[in-house]
Image (cartoon, rainbow, N blue to C red; front, side):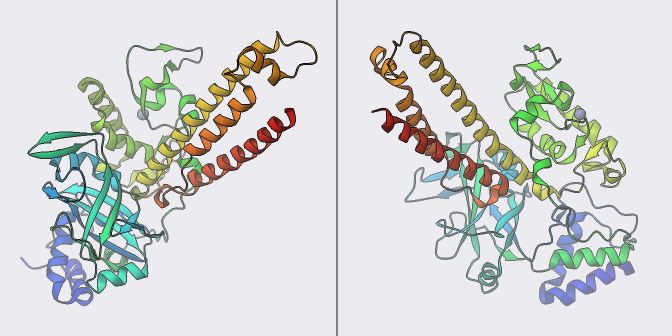
Amino acid sequence: MPRHPDFERIYQSFIKAYGEREEEVYYRWLRKLGYDDTKPLEGQTAEEGFNWIGTVDAPAKNLIRGEALHPVKTYHPEEWPEVRVYLEEELARSAETLMGKPLLLDHYLILPPPNRVVYATYRDGALEYVAEVDDEVAGMVRDGLIRHCSVEFDWERLERLDGVAPRGIEFTGLSLLRDVEPGDPRTTVELWEGILRHLRREEKLVAGEKKETGAAGELTLQERVWTRRYINDLPDSAFAVIEPGGRKDEEGKTVPRSLRHLPHHNASGAVDIPHLRSANSRVKQMTNLSEDLRRKALEHLDAHKRELGIGDHGEEAVTQKDGEVVGGEVPTWADGIILSTESAIHSIEEEVEELRRRVEALEESATLSKRSIGEGETLSEGVIERNPVIDSTRGELGLVEELLGMLPESVPPGVGYYPAELVQRLRRFLLEKKETRRQGALGRR
Ligand SMILES: [Zn+2]
């Protein structure tokens, strides 16, 4: 069957761009998108699922791509556990956690931005990734110095099979290998220079694309990232599923708040597209929920996707529903960045909450002691006399120091500006606190 002129034009541009490998790249592209190249391009929609062009729409300069891991055994002679078995279902479940994570070189050097993973998915028996790299890294890949890679991850527990299988994987980075042998020799790193720009331009030309969008929508992190407090203030209707067993507070919101899962409506009730997508990708992993609740959550999210025409239903309708929908301009590769920023902020919020509780408890005990402090005695003397263990001055100083110790030295590059800023502000606040407390303590002696 002859190629339709639309596709003939694209095919020719592949030949121009990729020389001897043109055919293979062209057919991979065609297969990925599920196009029929004997028919006009207009009217055909890219197949559901992994769509390199539709999903990776960052205005990236250098992109690399490849396979980061396969469900195989890998052997690490100098590290424990030596033999690691990667289970297929585990890789499928955890693949997306690689998105937004930093790139490293030979497992020791964290490469600075813009080097990072922008997309990851599990498909066709491999963990596939796309990453943005700077010119230097792109050069090393082009020169064949980097041909393999190796994932970094945390795991929740190990299962002993034929070897040891990590479970509850959360990827933390992708290391490019220059001087280190790969644990998985089938991993690949290839340059993907210009292919996105190229294909997008061709597709637009051929399909007579009307909207010339330019750069991907600006990410306004403050609106996109929901703090724990923000989530707790949302009404029950903002969540895909609420576990039974709670009660409603005076505002009609379920307590404890931890029974509410997968928030995807913002405070004004609009569907937030990035949170809808995240909820959708996380629902199957929520094994602490019953099968029935998970199914209900999926149905709820699916109903939104149908209504909005996203996911399996094409990307068309999203922009037309202002007010009811927000965040439609956020590219999918940013979902992972938003999620990891939120989890960083949530853990900082928890630490601050814990600090608040402990300070309150200290104040409480200080007040109790104060009642029995005689005239002329200072608060700390009174406290020390009655209870040598609880010295409110020293206790708080210790607490401040403990909290300082909890803050990370630096926030990993993939996490984003806002949490990094938050950590800096907390550190400054605690250091000031420490200084005033220390002076106060000295003054009293
Ligand atoms: Zn909903």
